[in-house]
Structures are given as structure tokens and as C-alpha cells.
Length: 401
Image 1 (cartoon, rainbow, N blue to C red):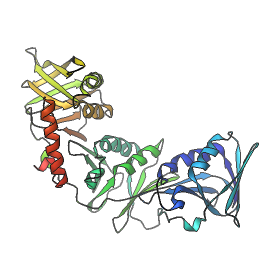
Image 2 (image 1 turned 90 degrees about the vertical axis):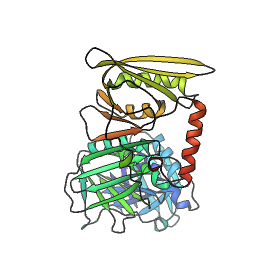
Image 3 (image 1 turned 180 degrees about the vertical axis):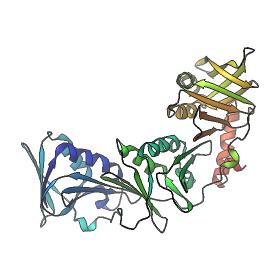
Image 4 (image 1 turned 135 degrees about the vertical axis):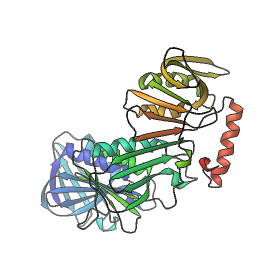
């Protein structure tokens, strides 16, 4: 292999595939990145056997070849070089890559590309599903934060991804909150099916979308054990999670007694302030929503306190329809959902102190977020969480209790 490329493009490519490099593995080759000539491009590949990434960058190829190089060392070295041309020459006999750039030179020993796992790519004849990149990126950002991070229930660490004719619906939940996002597909498909995609893999797709303009192509393998996202010059491939995602429809409130409309920015700011005093008290903040006699205007008061530190009260002007209500939520959960909303206003629909609350942006029916209420007493909330964790071990989700 003998080729040359620009330092900026190689550095960017290594940054794209670097998140898929295995950090702890008994196979040394998984800590490497594959460099392979591909006509007039250089292909970079990395995999941890769960998520794999391919990236192609422009290059002048004088001789074909391939090698795997320790990812950390290669990335750090390339990032340290000046923004000039880089020449790569492979000594196949010693499996050593000679790298030169300006006044710098290095020899890095690698492992044969034959030992690197095969990373699948897009093939002719694949059944391709297409979606606009902005829609997919927004959907990923609006559901992945709600997925579980603990491995006690693997299916909850994934996102239920349902393809239905001309729409795609993504659902994420950790048992205490729930996000559902629906978006249109660019092309229509004949059948309905669903898979569970790891939230981490989807976050990686959102990270590499960047300024992509062309529709993203999605392919599910016939065995339904892998999903491939094909972007311009980048592929992200992920293993799918086996299992059955819980039916979340029973937990989404169908009715409400109180409907509150509040400015998203002001609500987020008030939630962050309340969190300062709530983080040492199980993140509990109480929302006191009161309509006023003047048409539909009203007030929402956020209260939080820590016995040893103090308390905080924040008041917001809101529009209220229905009955007054006091309900407590986890401030961290409020901050998470409000931070990913682009709309100027958000709707809060509530029924009772012990019933889930529903949040959705004003003027957007494609996104729904449900949060379980928190009890006002710290001792009670600890008992509540222990109760729910017990059922998690038994694999019974809280919304089916």
C-alpha cells in the first residue's frame, strides 16, 4: 500500500471511526483501525463487534493494500501533525506502516488486515429504507436520552424502531420516563416490522450525520440481527438487541384534567435552578399549577428543598386549562426533555398527583414524552424506587404493574 491524503481529512476520518474501537478486548486487532485502499479513496474501519463504522476519505492511491494500526497511537500522531499532505507506505513483510508529513516521520507496527473482522456494507439488491437526515437526527436526540443505561433489562437499553409503510416510530424508556417520536420515511415500504436498536449505536449515527443532505439509507439484514445506516462516505452498522420491547401504549395518558402551556426556555431555566436544591433530595421538585380567574392565564410554582442546604421557589406565568394540581417530578428528567425541544412552548398534561404527566411541544404531534410523578417525601421516593427495582429484576415494567 502506497498512498497520500490530507492531514485534515485523515484526522476527521479517524475521529469518525474512533468511537467504534474496542477499549477492552481480548482480541488485540479490535483495538486497531483498518486502513485499506479503495480505488481513489482510503477506507477506515473500526469495530467492537457490537457497533462498526466505515469511513471513506479522498486519497491518491499509487499501490493497493491494507493494514490495521493501533487506533489510539495513530489518531494521536495524526492529530499532532501539521495540516499538510501525509504519505503512507506499507512494508508488507514486517507489517509496518511508514508515515511522513512535512518534517515528521514515524513507523508504526500493525496487524494483518486478514485478522480484522469483516464489516458489512451496502450491497446491490438490499431492501433500502430512506429517511431525511434532519428528521432522523432529531428523532434520535429525542428518544435515546430516555433509554436505560443499566444492563439489568437489555431491551430497555435499546430503542424500539418500528417501520410502518411510510412512517418510522422510535420509542425509548428506562421504566421511569418514556419518549415516542414519529417521522415520515422518504420512500414507502410494503410491510410493517420492528427491531430494537442499541441507543448507543443510534447516538453514534446522530453524531456522524453532521451536514449530511442526501437521504440516509437504512438496511436490515434478512436474519434481522444487524442494521446498517448508510451516509455519504460513512456506514454505521450495529447488532440488534434480541427480545420483546414492552407495550408502552397503556402508560401514555389518553385524557387529562389539567393542560398547562409554558415557555420552554423559561421552564428549562426554572428546572435547572430547582435542580440545584433538589439534587441532594432525590431530585424531587414540586410543581404547583394554579389557573387564575383571568381567562386561561395562571401560574406554575416550582419548589425544591434540601433539609441541610435550603429551599428554592420559582414562579412562571403559564396558560392553564382545567383544575389546579400539585405534582412532583424528577428535575433531571425535566431538564433532559426540555433541553431537546426546539419549540418555543411546551404542553404539560396532568390528571392526578400519582398519575404520569405528559409533555409535548406546542404545534408538534410527532413527539410525546411521559414522566412518572415523584412523591414529595424523600423516604417515600426511596421506597418507591426500591419497589420498582424489585419488579425490574422480575422483568415486569412499571407501566404494566
